[in-house]
Length: 475
Image 1: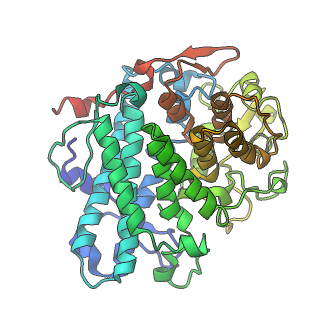
Image 2: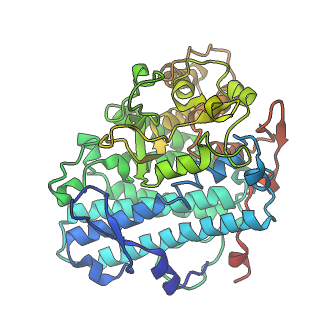
């Protein structure tokens, strides 16, 4: 991996607070993350904010890694012209290669910025209390692990069968030197080491005693430690750890991490009430924001919604499923909260099918959940617990807890847990990029395609996105 310092300088946007001091509502300043940024606590906070905001751009978690590219790989959509090569896993196509090359570069620039932040924060003195410094360091270590894990899930081998194959570099220092490609197993160990550091540093995270507290708008220093679900907080670190441990088939460890979040964090991240998902209500919270343990503030969210899913788009560019596939995913249940609030008829714009509106804007612009891009939600921890629990009844109870809070009836005791989980992932994570990674982790040999009655055979060549040519040719 090689990204020169000049490239990194161009890739990083240092964020300075705007005149109105709104939390994260800040304008970019084109400067590199260097020592003079860390002159005081507010400047250090702003530097970390800048990293989060870059994560929310369309090239990363504001688009490709959840709403578009990765969900196209999961075969959620009718493979229309604009997305056909990607949905066919044609990784030799020039456009597809450019997409993944850009994604790779954006992720590693973010990792290098995180490493620069950790280095400069570690060298700073007397700018903040040790307690607050630990929180910032914990978030940064968590972010480094989070980014590397998604690069591993995308570009790495199918871990369940090829854990010793070379995968990606793991960057721990801000350097322009080429770093070696490591076996997937070694990358996972490095991710878990960073998550362990983050967990320890975040042990006094205010989210554990206060939950998600709205900002006041009056004190940027204090507000920085509120709205903790917009940051990689203590419970988010445990949730990501549960993901990683399950990925490496450590079911006991994954279960322990998942149940800790369920048992401790449930009171701070309540389920969305059914009456908040009724069709036609004003200001619907379609992403069920109260349940989001970690998300980023995405100021391009509604632009992305229009660019990808708007019913006014042409039939060759819109991302939408055929009606039969949507019905099949939601098991012909129109009362499913996710279906009835996130899908509307496109007939008024000549579309004989429903279109996805999960990320449509709302009328009231001051609502706390505006611009929130979900990256980890409570339901996933229930699914992980269900998969990792040996007792059939307990596993079904975990799944049924989510189903009850999505307006569905309970599954009976004879259900096959893996089959039930595959269906639940497809319903729950539309527009959030987790379903393809579920298929790859399970090495599922055939997945439902974007057209009626079409199943797509899968193999490692389709699951493993090749490293960008810019990466392999520089070695």
